[in-house]
Image 1: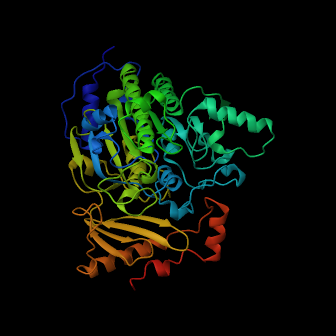
Image 2: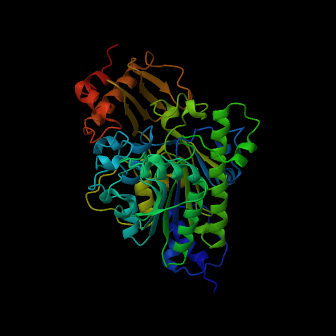
Image 3: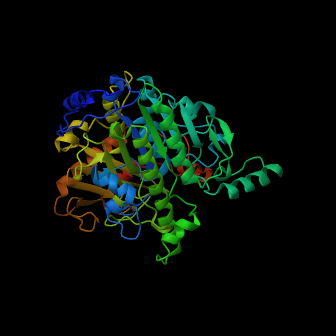
Length: 491
């Protein structure tokens, strides 16, 4: 049955300020007018993917045709930042819309975190819960890393459907990890390393048979197909763990990159290619079920690539874990036919903290009263080609052993504190590699940025957990975080 959705999409265009009004009439099966007004949201998150390790961001040796096509037909963000330079805190910010430091989640949960019984504060309403309560079908596939006990489980944080693993990583070949798991279980080992555990579906163990990246892609398709049969839009959080270590790739994928001599780079490239293959299958599935044109696809990485494990972040400096650009500036695009401009680059800075309010706006969802957010709805500024964070700071902070690294971007300026060296200042629009320190030339700009960042640090809480026991011991021993030393401009 034909529906006059050209009018409905026109209404959506008016509401959100989209400049593209050329929309064709098309058939939508099984969807009410209310659904067509609200997009499906597909958030695809890679783990440790380098800034320059996808074709649309300049990769020459890694083939990503499916991602490149979506990026070309959407908008590529050249200055997309996540809120932390490594896994758990970055994902915390995605789900809560808050800097992880403000809620005591600035460290990764330790491996097998069920043994400490901790997770992201229940007082923080996840974006999944907001969308669920607004009528969305909500699903997460893949890596969780936000709490492994029942009260922190995805099904209790706003997700109707969860297929994946609760920890911070996993091995990729089930014939290998399940065999090791069964052997250790038979031997009576009390705690088995989380990378070896069976996957689960809504709390029940499953014996997955596919290579992990392929399995996650197929489970995302399964959820979206099921959701399309319901009279509601969907939110799919596809949380790949590729190309995070261990570097384990399929033989046929490795063969495609035989020309890469470095073994780590070759395996890494093959793992990225597996993600791209999955995205290609997802695009086909969305078209088959008539949901492609009404789905906002957001693709990015949770932090910068790990250069010691095959990744590159060119032209950015450093990588995963760093407060330099390569640690938290990530490849990203938006794709949504007739709503997201096609063939465009968006060079203004945006943050993953902005997803929470932006998704809520697009979904016409109600954010709970009193819910604190550190990002903002960027949709109208994005469509208008304006800077949503003009004259606003975007922060990053990473604690190390006995000291803290910090970065703060304000328009074209970036203040940087690394490795206990004096504060530096860069014009980040002209100097992506952070090579030309301008602190002596513009001392007043640096002083103001450091002062504002110091004020921001006063909103932080003490960590509620550490990625290992020794880090916690050293933290308390050193009376960390020593922000007085961090924000001193004295040499």
